Image 1 (cartoon, rainbow, N blue to C red):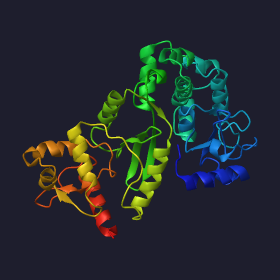
Image 2: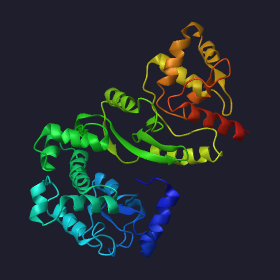
Image 3: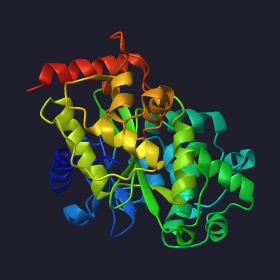
Image 4: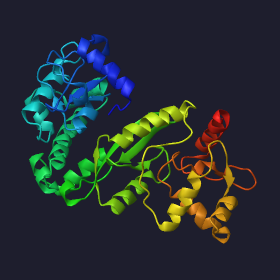
Length: 351
């Protein structure tokens, strides 16, 4: 989902004016109706606060929105072929249907042609589209408090293992009952000049902010789920919106301190290490031994370094500011080149 406020406002302006130059640029999900539309949809325009904007149809489907019946965002005659239109309509007639080879034959459609045309227009195959539609329905049921087993059956999955596999393939983790957990976390991808960064948060603070190439990212998310016993669903929260804005300011060289609230999930010792990292000033570095000394843990050098590596809030908790005593960069979960870039960026913009 697109979270940048300026982009969202630009897209909303295009929506109000039905600007056809934005066709294929974004889709808008309307929270009050549960549908997603093209920018030129003739329907009555929703309020800005009821809109969610997506770059792709798959993102809108996974957020549990269904295609609008008025503007038909995936079936516009000037945008897709009759084959695609026919298949999209067939899915909407029975969105929980599991498509098999014989279903294509019944419609006199070549399965490979369907795959190729969907991939060309929507950057996903037809099977991926149909799966996203079904999983979107399941997510909607889970969000509303239905049990996982009920969501599974209501979205057309007879096999529990098949449902979990399909859900995990798209969402990265198996589904969990929201009513079985105290916490519902939202996850989204933030676009930065250093690549995508997954962010996970509830309404009070961030739990995870990482570079997508970080070693062991999937394991980090698994540990987060175990510690919070939470359900992770796609979406955004105020802390995610806040850190998205602050990261843009940071990368523009205009922000040296972060104000977005966050949660620290770790042992008392790990939390002490992370708080000590936060005390390192923007544009400065400290050696591993100096960090251990400041914690009165000089003999626990490796333990301190391991705690640095367990940090789940990249940049906010600046473990990139720790280097070796010899002046070399040392290690970094996001990779040495990222660490080098961050240090040089802060040095250049230090005031």
